Length: 73
Image 1: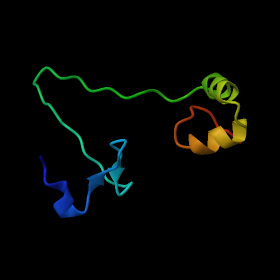
Image 2: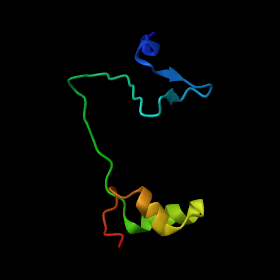
Image 3: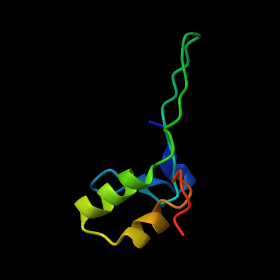
Image 4: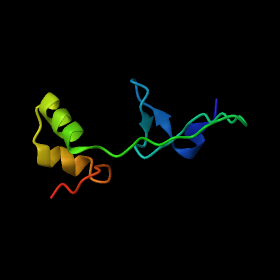
């Protein structure tokens, strides 16, 4: 529909975009739209996530580096 292959972009069998850095989206605007952000992550949230995933806390903190509301050091 968007002729993305002309730009070197495509889809895999599972509909992931290639190359991996490709970005697309549908944007709908309305005068009553409200925008929001997701808040920063608390230590309890990060610890719970690491526990549920069975991952090392330091590794999860590294992945989420810009998002915690605390200093992971």
